[in-house]
Amino acid sequence: MTTRSDEILEIEIKLRVASIDRARALLARLPAVLARERSFEDNAIYDTPDGSLRREEHVLRLRETDGEGRITWKEKVATQLHAKVQAEVESRVENPEAMRSILEKLGMVVVYRYQKYRADYRWTDPEGGAQLDICLDDTPIGAFLELEGPAETIDRAAIAMGFSSADYLLDDYRTLHLRWLDEQGLPPGDMIFADRQVSQA
Image (cartoon, rainbow, N blue to C red; front, side):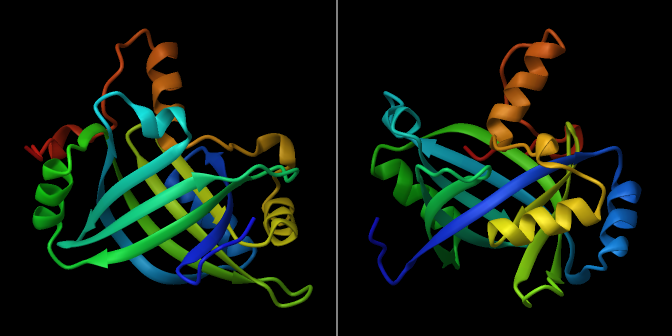
């Protein structure tokens, strides 16, 4: 696969943890260093009215954090790795509301919203010095660690925190949330906090 200069290859997995406090204790075990304080994120997934992006396993996401936005395009990449691998193009957006208007004028529609509180951590692998980005996510369906970096570095960090590859979650939050709703006997919907139900209309 060829990639453009503005495209990166994202290799990541998620790990479910019992609580935010438990996750922080596991990060201290590495130890991982806090790179960005916890902040609120509101994410909107866009698609064509007929759902063609989801069928082709593409993702178009607009994320808003602290009044700033990021627009992201992701494409699934076939791999033998036990990880989620995607080609990603991302850009900062100064005015998320204007970007929403542009996407709507292009005929795109919001098909899913999800929210989380996220803190960013960094870990340097003592075996080789590779850096791992670790996100601690507090979501309406529980706490998760998201590990992104070289596959072997992901494995070493997971093992150091007491996990194995059997614990790896390779699905996105939309899939995990829909599965959780089904297990609870609830209808499909957005993954948003009860006190954060702000309309994006």
